[in-house]
Image (cartoon, rainbow, N blue to C red):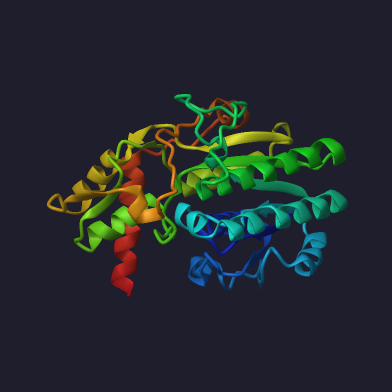
Length: 325
């Protein structure tokens, strides 16, 4: 059994990673400042004897230098997340995503820890291919558009991680997440499914940006976490980048229709321009679909829960939360 550090461990994905590791018998140290995470995300394991929670920021070099030497594996999930947060505060995005990652990588290279770096499909930018594989070009927009700060900052993280692998032999795995969804995710930062579900459960119009023709794929967080931990136990994954997500495309309009069908077919869809939601300088990507061949070949599995199953689970969880309030 290993001792694991999970940065951002009280966040949406981080809390699921924490639970998974504890259930497998590992010891877990969670580092989170609750800027986007929540204590309630760890409620089910709050009293677990193998869990240690440290309140603090990944931007604190003294705290990182204290925590890293005592662990065997680092799951680096803390980051500035969400389209809205990135559009509103690109400075925070860049500072949170780059400098702490570099420090963590340096500490892990010194201490010999295995390292998982959570990255994002945003690094592909505006690549025009129908499906993106890990070796495709990154096509980012202009620096005058804050929208691209997130993808650019995570691309730098990837370059750093792979450089540390080549130069120091750091056992690092990079995972590019594609629209991970499930219980505990909130819509405050632009996440589309929880936002749609909340609107529908409130009996309000479901707000779709632009014309709803944007194409996305969704994966349940449980399957994503299984892939993440599986890669960290697979030596062949070291020093490589993996797309992690679902690969069944759906338009945002179709997604809204499926949510409405499950909650209340009478609820309308309301279309608004991007400028109203994110400002005049916002740019979006029309299609984002991963090629999961590398993940399948390496692990022998990949996320495959249907969109209907994912939506049913999220709606059930949302209703349970509302009933408990």
